[in-house]
Image (cartoon, rainbow, N blue to C red; front, side, top):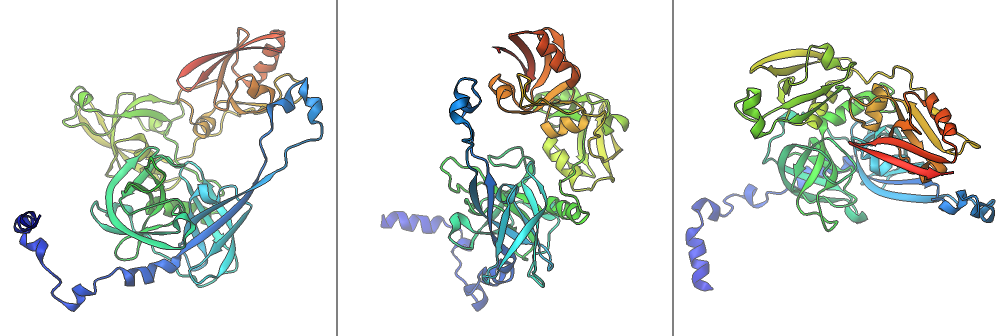
Length: 455
């Protein structure tokens, strides 16, 4: 063992063996940075009232008489997380899965002061929520750092309240940028990856740089055990800034630009055939007739390689780049066609809610009551994440007999008892024409499903 230790020491580079040579190096610490930033990170306690699940027997024609007047009592759910103060007036950012749908939100500062708060704007897809603290002034806050300045390898600190033990600080580095897709949590999109330990309760906490600036909001981890394995994800500060801007405009829901297209990352075996020297960008596979990209001159087979000069390699990354620009603005999108690159201006707009969605809810005595249908338009496509070229009528809600029949939100109803369904008004006559035996054909995701049942 002693010989092995000597060999290790001899093999270690001289620079790695150097001991601290000054008082400043001896006392090197994150403490001043934590003292500066920690007061702006708060603990959040949220409660919401939820309706207890109904037993399916309550809707059964035979058993329902045994449950008359026996509705399940609502119950209270509690959640614990973290948040970051972004302004002296009490604007706070947290995760949607911490405060979304909450009826009571309490914010506790590091000095133990406690305030009530309300959600100004929330979005489940991005897993972000903007809150306003009531009755607080001159609060400590963290400045935002532009996301394009962040580099892999930078030292970072994660501040939050893991497992409810109290405010905790962990250190690490930025492990990766442009991590897109669902990483195992509630949010979908574009993330900063870090190896700074993040655990349950850290959600909504701060990821800061060595200057005390906020570079991201901790949101989720990649884990098999439930604890941190050194792969954590944070929502970039640029997207947080876009949320704050829309909240200050008075919006309650986050409006993101609608691309009106579908595409896939360019793989290595595709690059040569598409006129690219290396695999990069997104190849367009479909364009909706109302797509702003179609209006700007894009076509199926074109490749998108950058938005405003920033490279994009996945659809989620492209949507992120567009979201941080702002609604009503234009982005310079780099298009590659026949091997030639060109910047094309694309106007950033929300998905149009036209033609009218004709939303229809069926009530008793209709046999499939509890069902809500809507005509598919661009806004419905975006809300339900439907295939970009889907048309016709879609299920937006299903409960009671409709759910027992096998219908689910997001199902595109194509045919009922042999009759084509194009608008919600077509559905009821087609059901009535079927009598006791019913057959419904739906498009569920990318596969067709046939539902057969009897009344």
